[in-house]
Length: 386
Image (cartoon, rainbow, N blue to C red; front, side, top):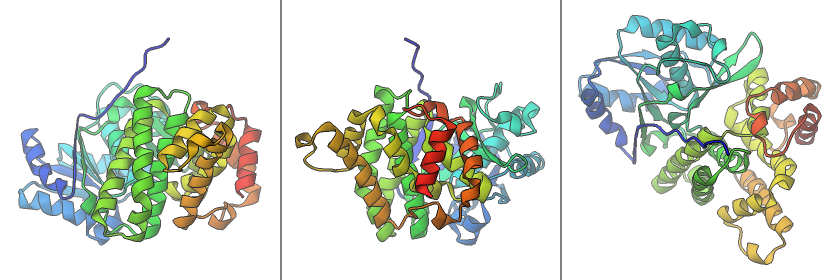
């Protein structure tokens, strides 16, 4: 049997207000100036400002790079690398959802591995030699878990595709999961990012590479999401729900980062590349359709998912019925959160489905799916979801 690998980041802090630990960690590590990677919306709503205030209070200088798209592009990364070079900074402070943190990872990797400056050569498992510029990651959404994963996603606009980059050298040296920074997320973003975290946990649990260590993370994440997501959406200032989701998405990341994902992500990535569909929305919409396709691969694990989602009386049900209960529970949760239920509802064109299916089949996540999926299988799922 081949050896199983697990990679986790060095240090993380959790809890409301935990951003206040950043100056202590910066000074302990001997850093002098921050290159802050964020986006204009977070600047506008003063979410980034809550972190910058901590730097200012501690007299830590910084420069800001906020030219990050919701689905960050090769151009975003290349302009960020250039800005970092001229900034005089010696570490990167990534503040935001997956987009700023993913962009920061690519900037950090290329800055220390300039032979990958075309960005596109980072796709897949790139043979980088050097660790990224030190990154402190401060997530402001409860979904992607980019702060704890070895993955990042960049859009290649020339080829109209999302590149999934997998590199242990990209891990942030420090993650600060401060739920106070998530309080101003609008309901639709809370719902979409929360369902993204649920997708990570479910796909990570049933993927081919899953094992006891990753299963532990996935099941706990599902339990926490079942307990807290609906409340976080409907009561945005509920601190317990926000903290629960902040923890859940991180735990889900610890799992899937080490075992991979499946075709929910394979199918979501082309939607982002073709249509700029928010990643969480794409995952949330597709999840139940793909679960229906995958259920036959491991009904026992689907029963475990149903249990983690809080479905009662599973012991008295036949295995197939208990497994189906997991899909019903995911559909019910999506409905409560007002997640779109069809691709037509989010502006996908039926004529594009064959091209989307081909792109999804070629995605790096496809081999991890628990059930083998051909281009035609994926196209059939897209059509069902349409």
